[in-house]
Length: 155
Image (cartoon, rainbow, N blue to C red; front, side, top):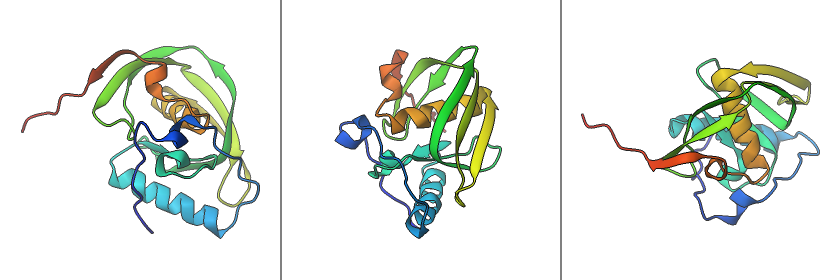
């Protein structure tokens, strides 16, 4: 496995709609593995393929409940709303308050090409929406209010 360099704000790929994955093959499996390793290495809770320079509709998320991998994810329903702070590995040192659906359903495929349906609420719902936004070329700062620099904690 490999740790990829994370693409940062200003790179054109972050503003483009990622391409659907027509067929799951070994390259996609390897991409999923490397994305997870990259996300954990960067201490993130989610990563979308465009964030490593790959225009594919692939995401990985782990909010502490175990790794979730999705290929061609689509949000099929949303309910409620809540506002909370978000950051992004592609926009280091910046946070903002984003209002998102509090409960969502997402359909996609797992690494074996099997249909996957996830019902998520709270932090997982937020992380999934954030990563799926990346697949559509949308960055959290476009939706955020109260954008601010993250102040590092002193030891």
